[in-house]
Amino acid sequence: MILSGEAGIDQGKLTDGFLRDVVFNLLVAGRDTIAAALSWFFWLVAKNPNVEEKILKELDQVMGKETSFPSTEELNKMVYLHGAMCETLRLYPSVPYEHKQSIEPDVLPSGHAIDGNTRILLSIFSMGRMEEIWGVDWMDFKPERWISVGSVDEKKKMVVSHMPAYKFTAFMAGPRTCLGRKIAFVQMKAIASCVLRRFKIEVVDGHPMVPDASILMFMKYGLKVRVSYRA
Picture 1 (cartoon, rainbow, N blue to C red):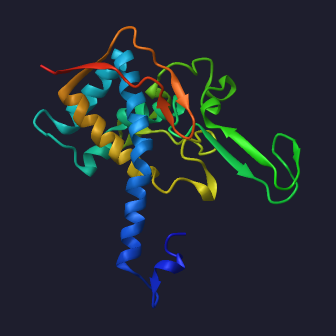
Picture 2 (cartoon, rainbow, N blue to C red; picture 1 turned 90 degrees about the vertical axis):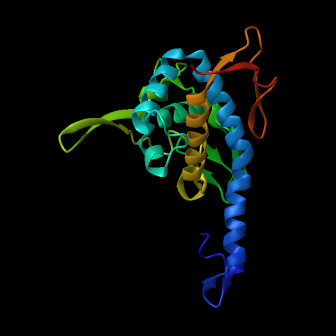
Picture 3 (cartoon, rainbow, N blue to C red; picture 1 turned 180 degrees about the vertical axis):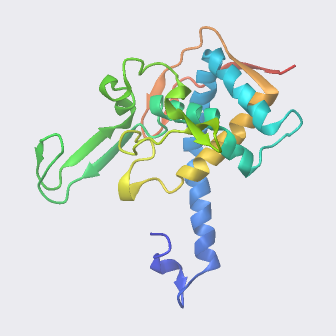
C-alpha cells in the first residue's frame, strides 16, 4: 500500500521526501498509543510481582548483567516480555474502540442484517475480556497464554504462540492491520527492558486506577508510583 502511493513516486522511484514522511508518520502515530500501553504495562507488572520476577530473569538471561541497552537480536529473544506486552494490550488496548461503515447492505457473520451506510462500533476492549474467547481466567494478567514451548535442534525453548488477528484485535486485522505493529513492539520492549532492569516501580496505595476510554485508553487519574533504583 505504501509502495503504491502515487504521491511519493517520481519516475518510478520513491522520493526521499515520501519515505521521510512515512517514517515520521509511523513514529508520531505511535507516540500516544505506546505511552498509554506502557503505562498500563508498568501498572500491571507492579501489581503482579510473579510476572515481574519472570521478566527480570529473562532479561538477565538474554542481555547479561552488563548490557545497558538491548540489541534487535536480544529484543527478539524476549519472549516472556513479548507475552506480557500482548497481555497488556488484550486487557487495556491503546485504541479501545474502532468503527466501520458498510458500503452496501450485508449480513454479518453473527447473522445480523445491516443496511448500506451503517456504522458499526467495535469494542476491542470488550473483545479482550470475553470468557468464551479467552477462558475463565480472562481477567488474570497471564503472559503464559501467549507462549508455547517449541523444539529447536532438539532443545526446548519458549516461543511466541500464533494468535489469530481476529481474536487479538488490538492492532486490527486483515488489510487494515496497523502498519506500525512491529515497530510498536520494538519500542515497547526496548523501553520496558531498560526501565525494569534499573528501577523498581511500586504503585502508590489508594491511588484510583480508572480507564478513560475515548479515542485512546488512558488512565483517568494518571499513574502514581514510587520509583527506586534496583540493588
